[in-house]
Image (cartoon, rainbow, N blue to C red; front, side, top):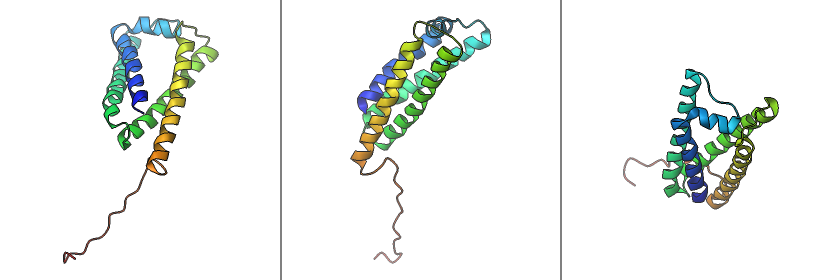
Length: 145
């Protein structure tokens, strides 16, 4: 799981920084269309800051790669990667967008989603059943025995 988190951190940090610095150029590379409005530029930079936050969470969760925190983060990354594949595929097929980075981004997010599933399955096997456990505290007697 650590290698998944580290890889995701590096990829998302790079994309996030590109969106923070030059959102229109990043959008043009990905979708084949620049961002023209001030609102679009703000949204692009907001997306860049969100991706940098994902990168930081993945980077720091790498130290807990076998724990529940990392499993929860990987589950969230799975949701993110599936959504990215769906939206980017729609941009390509449904809207006819064709930036140089669009198809590679779909392939990359698809691969990351598969990696997330594999990591969660491995964590589930190693944890003895699943990443979610319900612990019921035992009652103690007040007299100390």
